[in-house]
Image (cartoon, rainbow, N blue to C red; front, top):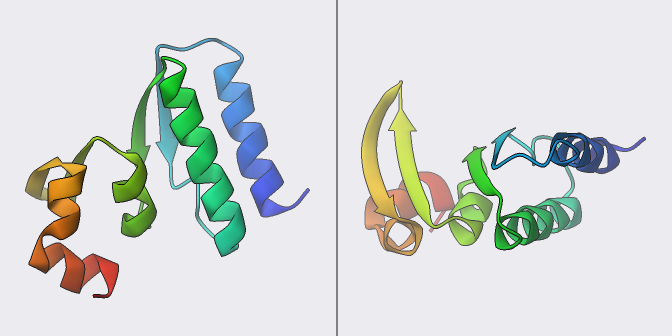
Length: 100
């Protein structure tokens, strides 16, 4: 199986138990950009269907696009928190994590 297929299988296995909360740790790690987009769509759809999601993700661009609330953690300390759309526009976040 490809990396993307493995990640989708891991999400599907987690959903089989019909959880109220799904914890995802780096679901986009090592995946091609098109597969990352697909993972983002799947996570969004799972949330829309009523499952809360706790997403830990280094791909800040993807995470901030699909999340409602975000926490920026540096060396184990929360340095910024709030609505994802506001954090995505923060100049420090753009420079440090979004490459803008």
